[in-house]
Length: 249
Image 1 (cartoon, rainbow, N blue to C red):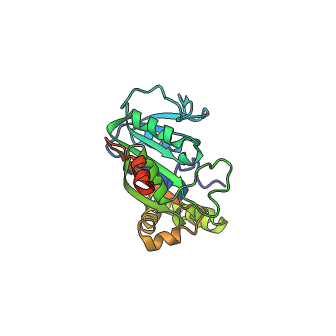
Image 2 (cartoon, rainbow, N blue to C red):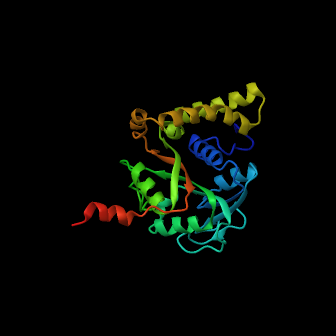
Image 3 (cartoon, helix red, strand yellow):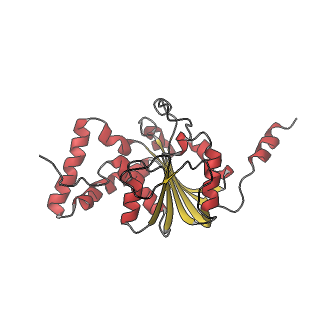
């Protein structure tokens, strides 16, 4: 017997926490570029809440129409300042030319444009996959973004709550059961019922991910990584000057 006739889009906390943070960081932004949206989660959710979404990926996605099929590491067909928001969720760790990619994002964003990034942080599992060619820390991702013309305005570390459904069949079943109970007792739609439960877990995740002591706990989980909002700035930080200042002979 199926629990839902149509599976809720964001029933997994992994998807929910990233999607809700992305939507919150893009508040007030209308035309948004989503880079690398395999599975279509960001395209579908942002479209639902009224964003004008363009998707760019290195491969076509059968559930997303009109994908721009190319790498973000080369010049895109968009005009300068065309977007007021951009999303790179779980993308930067796949790119050898990450600076080039971020410079292209900088070009196509408006002066007050916002970039949303999620990225895994280094742990004993995050550098195992062959498709991860960059593994960051909080400091290295900030420096990379600053080098490319962005200032991080908000950030938290995901971990425990993001990983919760993947612990084992018991934890996953418990969360999904809570979703169904919320649907029955509140008489809400499946997606609204998921929101009742997962919004509470998201709040816990943000608390754990914003304090130095609790971040140590977040590091214990395979989902450990950063979720952040970065603002486009007029002047890029000159890291050549940083190097020269520290290594002059």
